[in-house]
Length: 257
Image (cartoon, rainbow, N blue to C red; front, side):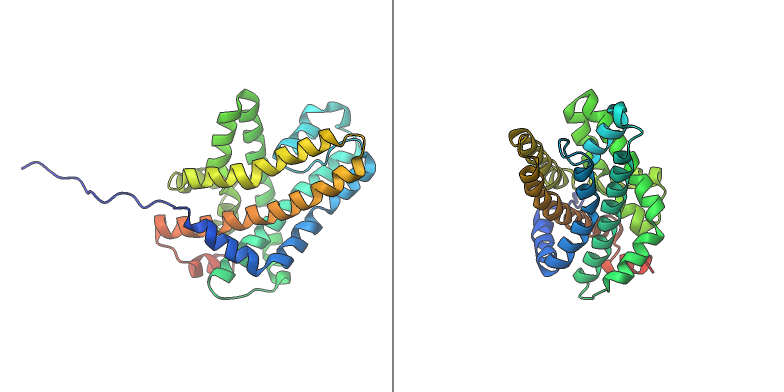
């Protein structure tokens, strides 16, 4: 008798999570914007230090300023960029916890979400730095490998936050989860992470002689899309955990206790 294989296809993440993310984002729209607006405040100081240079937030611009632009390696701008980077990571963790509660029909005070995020801040920031470095390396080698790497690593911060994982374990776990939803996550990365950064670069180039206007136009791009990107990752992570591990949203909330 010829053995038969299980014909049940592996469960994969569909595009439906985007609609659920939109609902979650709309439900906490203003609080999420405030969180990311506060996280973006170091960019205002960065702009004040040198209005002729673009804001230094995001994996590419952060490492471009710190690693590639050695002329600024000892300047106050590096500290500002590092602070902005850490605040954005913390804001992502706060949004993650808030979204997980919202999807379970619960609420959590932002002060409590901030406290729990701060408790894991060192591991989260280190994980984000590893993701940024590997993404930059992939982009320097070729754009496509960098984009693929970023997609597989996109869930590393939610993993590090919810599963108390080390940076290397978070990267491996993120890749494992992302393999069940690579193309939806790739779409998220392209539309809500990469595209706004490209638009901001174009704005800075086109309005190089009007830096104040360029900066003002860049703020909503960073704040709105940053908050929405964090929401999308939170919902995707929750649903992939349910698909792959059978873990409910309540289980994920309990992990933060």
